[in-house]
Image 1 (cartoon, one colour):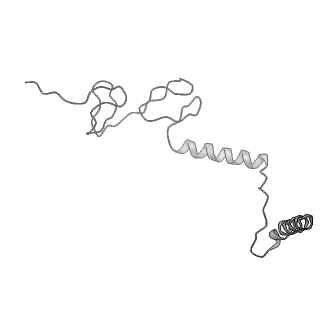
Image 2 (cartoon, rainbow, N blue to C red):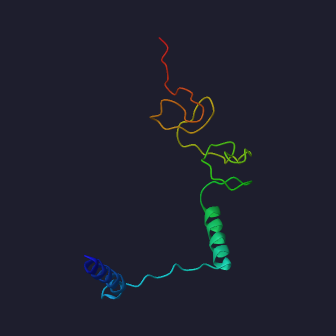
Image 3 (cartoon, rainbow, N blue to C red):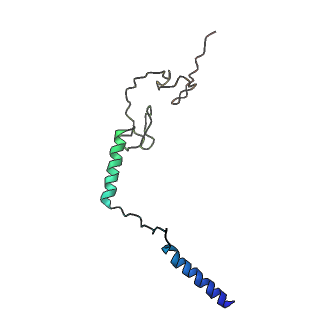
Length: 117
């Protein structure tokens, strides 16, 4: 019984040592190490790309949606672009709405027009 255990352990150890050397097994590559300069360059590129598209708070850089008045991160007032509205607007707050909207997404005002009887 003892000899069988020793033989089995020897086979297992040999398999563990030989398995990585078998054909078709790619050696494990270490993860690339980034330098501080590469990280700084990547951050600059991301900031440059972010400034070209989308709306971001001028104080903290947090993104916001068109029509928002205050930043959700820092609470600062956001710049309001002049809206050349091609569609309907909410009569309560002036936010653009879709034709199919029943309520305004900004203030909750009912968009259903009630007919006078």
